Length: 275
Ligand code: URA
Image (cartoon, rainbow, N blue to C red; front, side, top):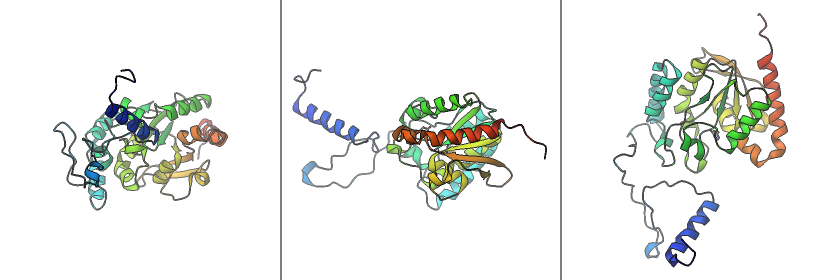
């Protein structure tokens, strides 16, 4: 369509969409648009009518609060029954206890990619738009940077990559602690099944939830911590580092992340000493 063939309302709509996109709005929360400006007053939102094929929000466990423990128990049961990574992927896809799934930005569950017997487990925050579309973690710009860094460190084919949550949060907001807790039994089961020798945590959200610590990423990065499973039967060395999305915004910080990767690789390649 040429500029002149568009009607004024079409041009106005296009310009408004461009403004929203520029402002970072990239997800729709309701199925239908809501005209809050109509009639010169703010109209209270009606609850959206869900199309029958859309996933239905389960009454329990979806919003956080007291239902979180029921969702965690269900995640633990479903994860525990998964005998291998394929079964775990299917269990995650069927799981309805994580509220992000119903917030309107997620098309599908995004579980993992990489070697099923990798010595290094890499855990990020949660899927973004590209990951949501393709169903694999870290395949957007941040993922491409991550892959280049892993390749340069000789880790390319030695990793299994996943996230703390498996659905894309709207507007790429940081997942809440409750959402991460609900997904944690699946992350833990993945660690159990892959049995890596160590874990690399990308960014503050992954580091804080996996290590149950509160310091900022600049204080946590490059240090070794002990990750423990909820029942404390599993224990692995874990290192937080800067998230590749942060490195895209702050390229000068890449040397810190590189130094973290070097520290980690040195330990990964160190032959196991007998106790
Ligand atoms: N950022 C993440 O934390 N995870 C992804 O999968 C992609 C971007």
